[in-house]
Length: 302
Image (tube, rainbow, N blue to C red; front, top):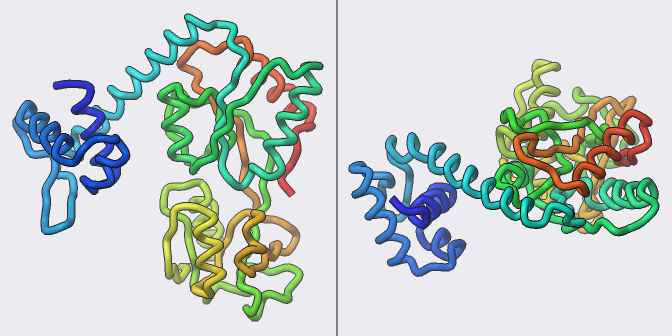
């Protein structure tokens, strides 16, 4: 069994599409298929089943996947740790964040950190993505710190500090009957068709909790991966959504309406991997975030 075979297996298991997996891995599809067949032969069980154009994991593949992912994560952490040992005083921080905090909270947070330090000798490499991918990158060492919700994360290595509460809004298209309202309650739209974020994400858990609190079973018309997709589906008048306010709303001709009393929020936290050694630069940034939290000086999302 080789490291390459494990990487090929994990990528194919994530995409469930041989052509896409080969493209992501930058290899030919025959090379990918051969590596996977050799891995199955080595393990003595089939990992994938193919029915027409549909690819799915077998029960053996489903059982093997978390172990393969864990092995790759541990190796990546080891590689990252060696890099930190070679360059213990690196002044660059790899920071990942979700899109909905990119336009206000992240610039303010970094600017406040520079004011706190009194200089700008620490640089940031920034990545934006959905929370699931950011956490994987945090665990494999390719990110040092992440700004994202933490309520849906189940990993003992991930440590967090709450930074601020992000307000959630009802988002409707401009011609919707509620578009002229200054505020809404859940009773105002409980019978509408909804565009929902995918299950298991923090935003899904927050929205689901809101519905459950009011004993409402939402009519979910579409389920999508991220907030931009939610906004585009609302703009196409396919439903309404509950989400944070993002700049793209104006591009889709939709409106964000606050809840009455501005009572619907979610917690955005700073997350880091507590199972690996930190550079002085990262320690300095985390210390700043802890101090900012205690002084309530970190910017809040508007």
